[in-house]
Structure formats: C-alpha cells, structure tokens
Length: 330
Image (tube, rainbow, N blue to C red; front, side, top):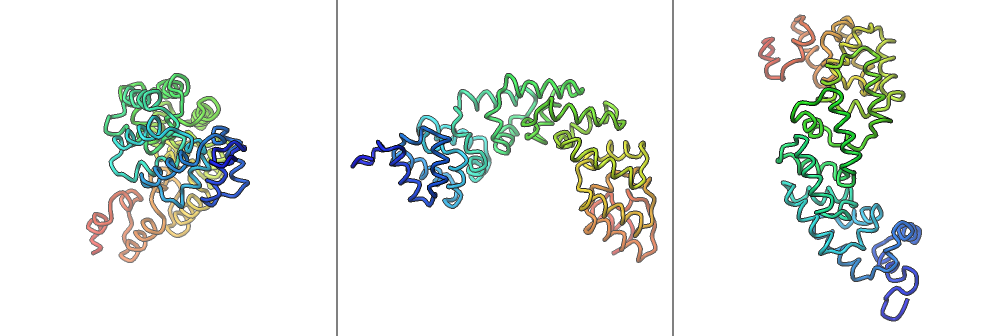
C-alpha cells in the first residue's frame, strides 16, 4: 500500500477499513474472494457507503453481518445505485424502518438497478393482479423478488398457478399477496411433486385450488420429509382415508404442522381428555387451527364445570366474548 493508502497492495486500503470496524482477517479474505471489486475500493468510498447505510436506519451492530452477506455493497456508487434504490423503496413502504429491515435481510437488492429490475418487477406484479397498494408490501417483505428473472422464473410460476385453475383475474395476485415467498421455489422440483401428492391422497382439483389460494405455503414443503409423514401419522392415529381428505381439504396446514408439538397433543386431548371420536375432528378440521392451551383446553374446562356438551365447532368457532355469551358463562 502506498503512502496515500491507495491500495496498490492487494486489498490493502480496504483491509484497514474492515479491521477498524471489527472484522477479522479470515472474514475479510472471504469477502475479498467473493467480491474482487473490493480490492480497488478506496477507504473513502467504503466509509461513505457504510455511513449511508447507518443513516437510513440499519443499526451499526448489524452492519458487519449485512456487509458480510453482500460485500459488493461497499463498492456500489452511492448516487447512481444505492440512493435511487433506497428512495424508490421508501416510496413503496409505509414506515421508514421497513426499508432498513428490507435491506438488512437482502442487501443484494441495492446492487440491482431501479430501471432495469425494480420497475419491471412492479409492473409484473400489477399485471398478475396485485393491487397497487399491496405491491410495495410484497417487495419489502420478500426483496429477493428483485433478483428473479421475470421472463423465466416468474413466468413459469404464473403458468403453473394458472394450470391449477387459478386463471380468473386477480387470483395469482392473491396467492402472491398471501405468500410472496412462493416465487422462490422450483416449480418442477418442489411444487409439481406436492400437487401430485395432494392428488394421490384424494384431493380434488377444487380442493387443491382452495389450498393454493389460502395456504400456498403447504405447496413449498418437502413431500417426503413433511407431508407424507404427517399423513402417515394421521392414519396411524386411526383416521380413515376419507377423513384425511376432509381434514386436508378443510385445513391444509395440517400437513405441515409439527407432529410432536401440535398434532399429537391435540389428538390426545381430543380423545383422552374430552373423550371424543376422531370423526368429530374430521367434520371440523379447524380444530387443528386453534391453540390447545389458550382456546381448546380453556373452553373445554369452562364448559365441563357447567356440564355443557356441544360440538367442536360450537365450542371453538367464535371469539371469547361470543363464547361466554353463547353458553351464559359470565
């Protein structure tokens, strides 16, 4: 490194910059390997970018982690790349902290151009039926969307969703509003096998459409690691195939709930404490949606004290105030 700190020695100037901010040599060398541009970045540029990221609300204690994820962020031009993207994200958000949080989670968003990537993404989301007011929320929630190819990855996802029958205007947009992370999954390797599995256990096309519209996160789970084991557990408990179809169609997340922490305790309480039959849960799949301690157990105890018997839906399908009034428990 020369006397002016111009970094003639490999990464010399930037090494001192990182050391001053608490990075160790191992992490510095890893960042230099991942981003060769850093070797020629001057202290002044890196410091300006670092300070700017602080100024928009990213806490200094989080900055080392943010920079480690995307070292290139220190080499980007402030005026031509970073500031325009931050300003556009600011327009999309409703709270100042949303932009800082978005960048902290996916700092690579700053390396994408506003005109080249962000504007086409916003236009695409609007074209598939996402309301204008919701577009910014989706991008800030899943900023990784900016990095996806619209022509290949996103178009493939839209074609997949429409092939399931979600072809009416605005349907795809609703799926994305509820689960913008679905865009990150591989259609052929993850989503198609999931749909085939849902068909194999007896769900109709209409059941699958409803599941995708309302609980699309089920589609993104691994068939062999999560979905099939849950179905096998329900069978082991004694649910018949038709009852399993009713459960999954009525409450698709039953396929991705933890067996040990959710399904097992609820089924045990249903059959042992409440002395009810499994078919009652099959008739009211939302039983598995309600919290065991705060809703099911509490309400069961309140009814038991009064000697009241009722269906699961009558017991659970209302807020607490209506429940108290319905059974005169006040």
